Length: 371
Image (cartoon, rainbow, N blue to C red; front, side, top):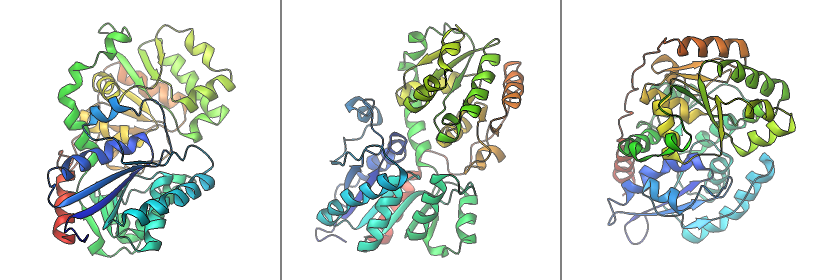
């Protein structure tokens, strides 16, 4: 413990989705000002203008105490740069606990630095496994969990994954899903979003789509097939597709953007705020995505989700939720999308402990264990 008797936590995020996972923790910390002293570090692994004061206000958290400005790069160079810049921050602040979330390179890098210095590590969203080691995120998960002292899981199958890897039971804690904490907090504000009016959806049915993974957008054959499926589906439903910068770049490089722009039923737009994205997801007929977080959000919203991946580290969204893997098979995507347009529905249920109180359970655990 710190000399002032308050638990000093250093919370690291590297990309925008991480903020949705750490935001409820930051709010929960603030309920215990006499017992917890939190610091927020943003490595800048991914940065865009959307990560602004408005964004932090939307999530009701203060802006980061430290911004490292790492920027993009190869996995090796980015991980190395985070480690190099993060080490002096950790040494300067000497926290009682490092808290990392998710599976980005910053999560891995910060955990390695902390482990070598001897700072205990809590990993929020531990134990998720796709069993696909071609995914950089899978390597990040495996290494981070091997170093973590508090492995905070979102589902019981994640606990099982950790046990199979020989992780001692005392390090495994099933607490629920902090991203869902954020989503449920934001749900009452969805009516304030004007995005449907801005995009002129006019009350018509629409599908919502996101795409960003290199395995989908950097491969011309794969991306061409996905675009062909979208062009076929748009004949029967509007499709709202906010373009991730990487995706837009590759659509241009592969000469795929113009055919999409010529269809009035395909609404291409810039990346959206969290509130606007959530608003569109909640009202969509169905969602097409390669995002892990969106698989979880659609499950809680009860909206059918077609995941454009061959595997998922979140199988509970399939076994209990509204998610379905379609891979990159364009014909299967069209077939399943067409069925959903026709009115087929996929009924799921909300997984255990996805109740908006995960951060409360985490902070209680840390205080009871470390203070």
